[in-house]
Length: 80
Image (cartoon, rainbow, N blue to C red; front, side, top):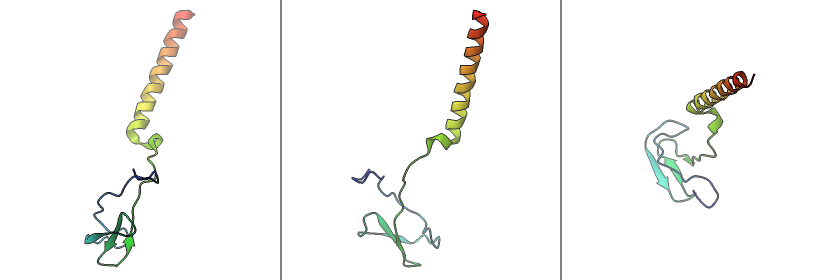
């Protein structure tokens, strides 16, 4: 991470504006890329990962909730 709290830039393979693959890193701004086809200079940053919406995490959460309900039901039956 950088001192601003954002993740540092990784290699970019396509220009987000024209989809050209001929990109060159530039010094200013830090972490920026220049597209040789459309002459745009851009940066790409990851702000956050919304873990609540990751498909594997949703399945895991559903399985945990199901196990919790089954445990609660079995405990309820034994105490009744």
